[in-house]
Image (cartoon, rainbow, N blue to C red; front, side, top):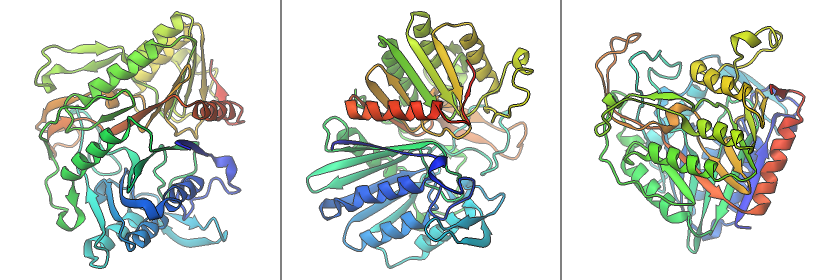
Length: 444
């Protein structure tokens, strides 16, 4: 089949609050490997861009198939960006044994990075680092995973075959030391309209990355400037990256147009929902001359609800309005980082008909269903994803006075547009399943 959909969730596992050696999505790991294995003899090259790369099962499998002559390119963030707090023991899902040695995400990634840095036995296997940091405010607080956030948040693979290609896109990091959540993965095989853009993206991403053997931890990553490339727009796939000029703005416009085309329904599911009424500071952009307040894609969703389109929202994070705190005082929610934007959005939801809202603390998938069209995303629906600034210059941060930043603000993200009816049905069932979970709370 040209399109395949896979879903993972906590209820598939007996010990769903344990950390597994196989990572935070063991079922998707299995499907990821199967997607490669069944066409292995026809594969020439595998390009993988994964936000976190610390899964030994993935790494060992890729090493093995690289020995057959398949070229492997993996792109991930610098080691500094891996969480080194709260070490935990790991359970082997196959044997049920628990390794008492506690580890962090950093510990596991460090082993892989060190191996690839010193290795001379894997000539067909390249590990690249994409060190771009993205920030737009001097008031940002220090991150737990490095001082500033890294932009490479995508989880995808482009598999080049002798005859054809496969594109994999997932919400899951497949990372070890992640808990199992509601995750998903899609596979697109040999369909027209997707390959040209994704092939160019991986070429550009690798050209703007650093091979692990050339990477130095003393490298200055506070200068994040790239030669800008004209973004190639497609009706099937969209990509944001700092080296694609204004790509985040183009993606916002594209998704808004899809939302405004809805005739009956919009279902929006993500870990975070906050892309509503946010500020755009023009001083950090070389062309725009005045500040803006943007309604965002969630503003478009609200407008469509007012036009009698049925809207369903699902998220992992939530924070009630002050007037609702007594209503939810016995319920603990994971709060969104951008509480202000979320509350602006939620306040409008409460006075808008045709909207229902569900919260489940394990949601990690990111997608939009618009009538019979699926827009499957690697990114959350927050202002960060839709702001492109090419001239950010921060001489010092209020809470980190020893750090400066000069560069482009843009997250690396990808979305694909799918109209296949089997895929639509699969995601409809996924939504229904999440809504019926005992952990799911219907807010409105």
